[in-house]
Image (cartoon, one colour):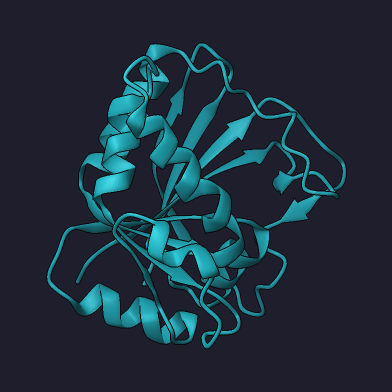
Length: 194
């Protein structure tokens, strides 16, 4: 069974964006150690799952980075471009118009739980999830995430977009690691107890 990892930046008080989607509070001047950590986190993956809205910015951004030989993130961008990407939506019958312009991207065309569970049973390496509040919250609510990699930024927002608010049942996690980085981010890694 493949492992689904979630990599997400959060505030100390558990928000992944401000009330209107603001992300200006996130630490982006990552030190080399954190960049290496992220590279290692994605080395074992061969599939990315995304929500439709997030994919519409994420995929074109990394395609542009991968094409820019002067961009220091080009190698990571190429990894994102080369790996299979599966895009989900609350409306499985409505793929984005730009889907055919995205390298190695496919439309899930099914419910989130069915699509992820099918994907986990297929042959392959680890899977990583990136996305906005609704997509991530849905993954968590359905207990589909096997590993949480929370990139905790040294800021409290007081209000914003949470990711655990849809839970209707308790989920128990096991602490796997805690890594502190010079730029101020602490990565907390948890595994879902089954």
